[in-house]
Every structure is written in C-alpha cells, then in structure tokens.
Amino acid sequence: MLQWIIVAILVYVIYFLVNKYEKRLNELNELVEINKNEINANKERIEENKSKLDGHHEKIKKNREHIDLNQQILSKLKD
Image (cartoon, rainbow, N blue to C red; front, side, top):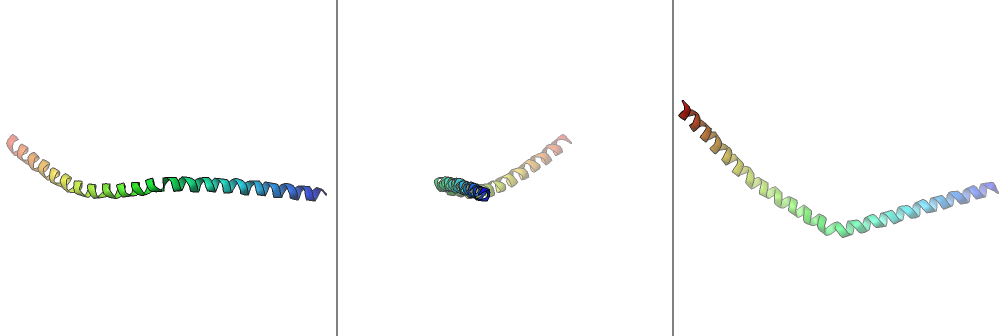
C-alpha cells in the first residue's frame, strides 16, 4: 500500500512539473511572437548602421590624412 502512495505522489509531482514547464514554454513563445516584429526591425537597423559605418570609415581616413598634413605643415612652420 505504501508503494502505491509513493507512486501516486511521484506521478503527481511529474504531472505538476510537466504542466509548469508547458506553461512556461507557452509564455516564452508568446513573448517571442510579440517581439518578432521588433527583432526583425532591429536586425534591419543593425544592417543600416553597418552600411553607415563603412561610409564613415572613409571620412575618418580622409580626416586623418588632413590632420597628418596639418601637423607636417605646423612642424615646418615651427622650424
């Protein structure tokens, strides 16, 4: 008799854990679906920013060249 009580308790615990796990999975799936559009929008923004960075690298390179040139001119004027 004691064995059946233990088995019943174990079955209930397993049922409780599975039920809790399924609820959590459903909750997470709902959150993913809600945020799916925003996730995709963020991916697009990331790509846009990457392309902007490429353009800025060229400008930074040009500015660095101008700075180097200006430093050379200043050093010549000091001498």
